[in-house]
Image 1 (cartoon, rainbow, N blue to C red):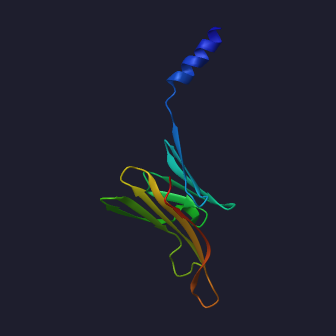
Image 2: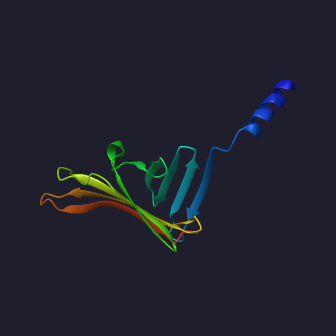
Image 3: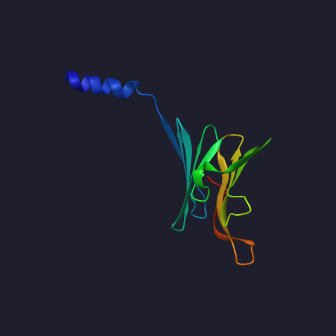
Length: 139
């Protein structure tokens, strides 16, 4: 009995380390936002495709499939309706692939849209989209 009470007291006293919000839309998109003590993880899914982006350090670094070694350049915009965040990866001239994240959050804190695009250079040296997962108008 004493052991059960100790376990219960420990669980009650533990701070909540993560908050998970799930957004959906009428097009079958699902966005899960897992806000932990150290990072915010965005998982976007639609029609069997999934993209994951991990932001840490108050959105100062990003880790996602098209952005090796947290090399993304993060740009912020802010307006009366909310704010936006764009990430560009592998922008150097030698790169053959790159990724782009576009995230819009309403001033209420609700995610408005989220998209992940990957691009590769074709044989002419032009950037072409290889995958694109973009969802908005979340409920």
